[in-house]
Length: 473
Image 1 (cartoon, helix red, strand yellow):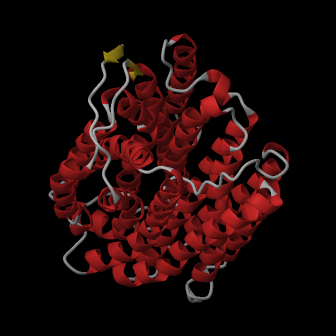
Image 2 (cartoon, helix red, strand yellow):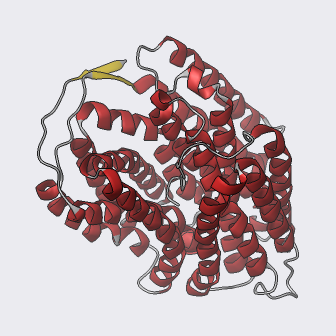
Image 3 (spheres, helix red, strand yellow):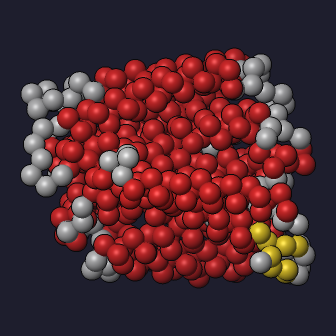
């Protein structure tokens, strides 16, 4: 099924007030990736959720956000950016209220999935409005503000999660989005230009297939934590995921308006960007997931203390991204990627020294901060080396693919982390062996990624002045 849609109308562009409202909306989307990490133990206690359900509280959002983002961008092109933006914002706001009022794990996970769908519509449409409203140097400044909002959102999310969970309760990490969403919904139509749509087709089957395939992959990995990697409950969904990915590839070859062009996906810079973004985001959210559960489950930390401990980590990611933005044009993407992964591996290895006898402020915090300094430049390297090495006509598709793998990497990273730490989270479990194993997997993965980057990442410095900061960073 491919949907045919016609053009919309045009109105005069707005000004900086539009940027403030759009950045406020984007801020909510980015915050919702990290804010829930600190609240996970409280959510599990109140709703009687085990490890598997808590994993889906995180991954349902990033899975739908990433799996449908390219579709959202295409809908913004076809239906018009403002229309798509307002629809996504309305859905995200309503889904946030549903999450806050949830009395069961099923309702909360469903709400998180709907939040992801709304985010997938909102984020690319908002960026399309910005690139239409602003031109020349003003566009560069506007995009710089947009990138800064992403970094601050990731940092403030962990602090906000701790404050709200320790104060009014975990439900408020979602409810706080509602007044903000309603405010932006009320103000945006008056100041946002009606960016025109273009007659065209939307590859709905492709979007649904890639999302379903990744969902089955995540389900199989999460199940492996309890059932084992050789169990039928693990192997069947993993096999189904492979089949759906193959079917997705076949659909992309025959669709009149494919979601992801095969020729673009086969380009080395795009493969490199997908690898860097997938691995970096997987490591980032996997380490947050392990760290939050270790601190609150094994060490008895409260939500606020956990949020405060994570704040230097989130800030380190932003500092690393800014450093990457300066280093990649000077040194090239390959040495920055290799060094960044090596730094992440060293930090994760430091984190494996956690024990009941040592303070997290001497092991977990410095190790995680070091790893975060390495993760930040990877987002910049992924976007910059990709966008500087693809033909101009494929920039939009390549950007959409890289941003999609940002969210899907988070889903897969949390799923793998959850499966490995399962022994330490089982009812009545004693010891922290599962947490140490999870951190070891992260360290080994980062080290292996450094070796892969030596061959995969394009050599040389990026041509032109393009410096990307990655989705949400």
